[in-house]
Image (cartoon, rainbow, N blue to C red):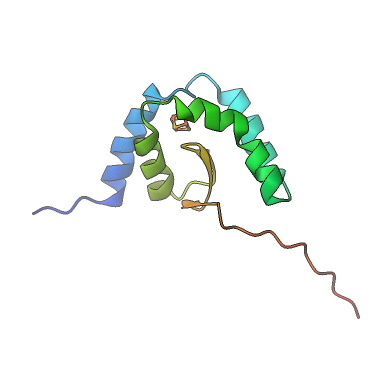
Length: 102
Ligand code: SF4
């Protein structure tokens, strides 16, 4: 049996994205991702997902989108959730940076 590489899977998933509900929302998506990325708390990140998650909820290719986000190491919003380096961003805890003192 021939193995299927991650690249082939990602390419197949990428072809499907042309059918996604976000295909005409490039500007909005960039704004939503910027807001998500700048959100300092889990509650703020969850709030930032509200609008894009509503778009994804009605999308016919959510599974393919999720696969591509994971296979490509995506950071941003895909398939209705946040990703960081291809992993769902749910468990990420942001800690305020400690200032070094002398
Ligand atoms: S699941 Fe969401 S991010 Fe993925 S293609 Fe569909 S609308 Fe776009």
